[in-house]
Image 1: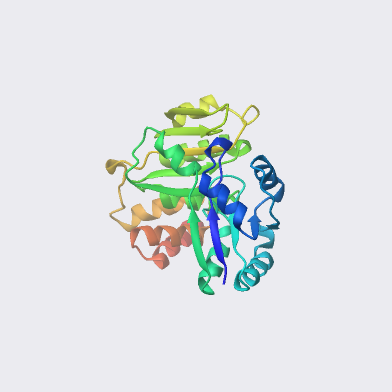
Image 2 (image 1 turned 60 degrees about the vertical axis):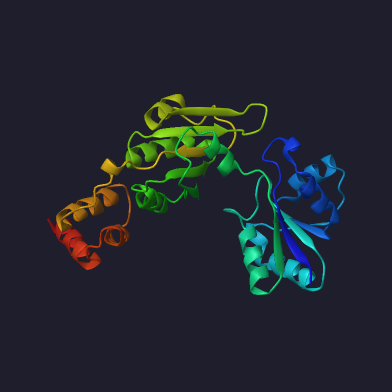
Length: 279
């Protein structure tokens, strides 16, 4: 039976490639890559010639079974992503799970991580943090996500694409209030940029998405203890339901979310919502 190696690759600067990562990619029988064109550039730079299997969100089920069969037959494989550590907010986690379920050994070859790198230079609290990945483009799911982490005291870390940055900063300001934020862009590359500011000032710096380039890691300070004020009455809880509904969240979803967060009855909150709609 073969071994699956989870191999971290540079997030921008090829000088960050580790010796062990290079040796692993040279010695495995095949490489599972998110985008074979991107990985080919990496392999060519280090003069590594190895067959690749395209493994991404759209073909994970089929490609995963192919990789598993080869691993069970005794071949060794590596899985990489376009940049950084694979299998973190990445379809590669499904292949690791598949291997675990079938008794295939999995080893990690650690490398650069945009999440940890951005956190380390953010200037914010690093002792406790939550990685939240990308916000959904679906409005309801997006607002639900922000509502769930609003009261988290841990430092929050999000990924965001440049064309959605302005809207994301605006929504975060509305949900979180004017907290400190570190905007990290092009980490380890020539034009690396880290801006430590507040959400309101960040909105002024990026009034639109037209001139924004590069993927962002957004590091936001957690909620202060005085910000966390759980409702003491069902009336206050219903006020939170209405706040979500006004932001576009479906009524039943808003009631479920607030009930889960506060302990008040979802049924009672929904009955109040129905009664309110009749007035």
